[in-house]
Image 1 (tube, rainbow, N blue to C red):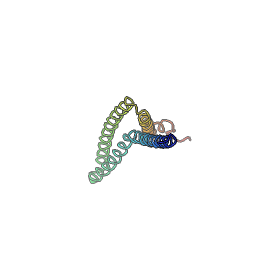
Image 2 (tube, rainbow, N blue to C red):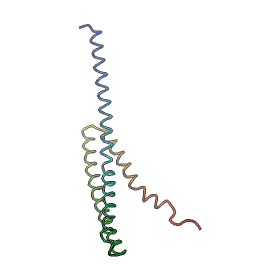
Image 3 (cartoon, helix red, strand yellow):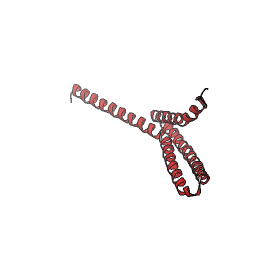
Length: 141
């Protein structure tokens, strides 16, 4: 085999290898970002279920009067908040364990993408509290 043909084949193999590494790196970054968004997805799902169950509870006790509806709604919202908090904390702990294992195995890009997604999730979760503090409660006279 001539050296020119060997160089051509070697260059082609190297470019294919680089393309495969680039696509696998991109896939790892996307996978890391999606894993980092899991707590946000769980939180949205639990909030939707809680709102639906609260509406159902209000309809079930509608004939009992306003105070019974208020109490049923409050109980359902408190239970939903506690369940959401538990699932959120468990999801974050598990994802942080995954990130630690990714960092130890050398998948730094995937770990970095998951951490950025977790930061984005934290910003979205804290945004209502920040807005409640920043915006005035009463309009100016």
